[in-house]
Image: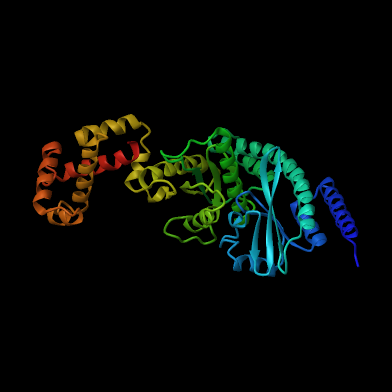
Length: 420
C-alpha cells in the first residue's frame, strides 16, 4: 500500500519536472501552445490559455473536450470561453473545469483553464498548474514587451499612411509587406471605438480605460487574423483601425457588409467576460493606397454620426448615412448649428418642450403633413394635432403649404441630430 509521503514525493517530483520542462520551452523561444501541450501531456488534462475575457490564445484540447465545454454552456458560439461562468471551478458532468489567473505584478495577463472529463482536478494538479501559470506569465510578459514595440511601430506607420505622410506607393507596399500586411487589394477602413460610460456610471480610472482599450484592440487583432493574416489592425489609443478586404466577387448592396458584420459579431461575442460596448464606422471601398486617407476620414465620421443618431453599439456604413453623409462632410460645426437656429428658431433649444415639438414635427414630415395619420401615430386627438400644427406654423412659417420650407426644416432636424 502506497504511503501518503510517497504519493506526496511523486506529486512533488512531477511538479518539478513540469516546471523544468516549461522553463526550457520558454528559454528556447517556445510559446503558449508549447506550454499548453506540455501541461496536457504531463497532467493528462485538457488545457486552454485565454485572454482575461475568454478569447482562446492557445489550447491542447481534444474534440471531446470542446464538445463537453459546449454542452455545459462554457463556450459561446464565437468560441469564446465563458470564464465568468467558470470562476475558480465548475462541474462538467462527472468531471471538473478549473480556472487560474495568469498574473504578473498584480496585473491579470491571461487565464489558464484545465478540464478533466472523468473526475475532479486534484490539489496536486492545481499546484502543478500554479507553476505552469507562473511560467506562462513570464512568457506573456516577454511577448507583450515585444508586441508593444511592434504595435507602436506599425501604428505609427499606418497613421502616417492614413494622414498622407508616407512616400510613394511602392515603398509603402513593400514596407507593409515586412509587417505581413497585404495593401494591394480593395479594402474598407473600419474605425472601432469603445462607447463612453453612461452618465450614471462611475468614471473609469486612466489605468482602467487603458486596460479596456488593450483588451479591445487585442480582440480586434485576433479576430482579424482569423479572417486573413494579412489584415492591418492597429490601436490608435482611443480607436482601433482595421483594413478589411472585400470578399472575392463581393456583390453586396453595401460593399464590405458581410466581412464587417462577421468581424463585429466575433469581437462582440455574447458580451460576457467584461467586454465593453463599442461603436463602429465603415468607409467606402478604397481601391488604392491613395484612397486610404479619405476612407479613414469617412470611417471616423461614420462612427461619430452613427453614435449620435443611433446611440452606442452601432455599426454605421458611410454609404448608408444618406443625408447625414452630406451633412457630415461640412467641417464647420458652428455653421451647422447656426443653420439649425435660423431654421428652427426656438425649436432648436435644448428644452423638453422644444424636443416634444420636434418629435411632432418629424412625424408630420414623415406623413407628408397628414394630420389624421400623425395624430394616430402620436396617440393624440385630431384637434390636439391641429393645435400643434398651428403652433408649429406660428413658430416656423407655413409648413403645410411651402415645400421648400419643409425641406429646410427636415434638413435642420437631421443637422441637429449630428451637430447638437
